Image (cartoon, rainbow, N blue to C red; front, side, top):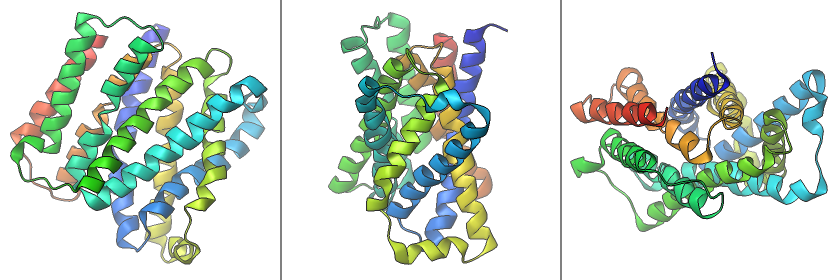
Length: 287
């Protein structure tokens, strides 16, 4: 199996894993834990685990140069923490469907920035794949049903989540030239964790241990909603263009919709499966 094929599989797995975020955040929100603390939990928990894990398995991940510090800062604070913050708050102002499609304005952001900054070619196939990706996200979210709600503040939060999420691909593109995927991922979370205390509400921290169910959902959010997909995504970007990588992980809202249907009993519709088909078709075109 070629390195590029493995990279595509890693990116697909990252999108699937990210799609399970709602499975954990819904339970945490129901327990009284706010959006600020959930965003901080993802970053601090991931940073602690990665630092301990790579201290034992990959000391090279800790190497950092002065000229890369601004890029690591941007990747960590602006993208990793920023996208988590905006996305969690978008969900409080909009329906989950609208929040999902606003987050996945990211592929469009990355394609535009990749052409302007990274000088990647804007091919016909890539343009068509982008169209299918955005159409698929809209169908999966139920955007065309006309029953979704969103405030102006929610719209701004959602666009912020898409822009900051998209920036991860741009920062990582430059960092991966001189750093391994492990180091890029770890430092992004270390910088995010350093800024996360500004979001923490101490009175809610104790709720994380209020029951075994809440604690397990917190651990699940860190491992399956943050650590695993971030490592897979950054690793996959070593062999795939930033714009292509961002479109491939757009499987996330489709998986999230299926989780809603089969776990939370949300209505099943033909639009969900049509949207999933559009996203899978875009991945096939890119491959």
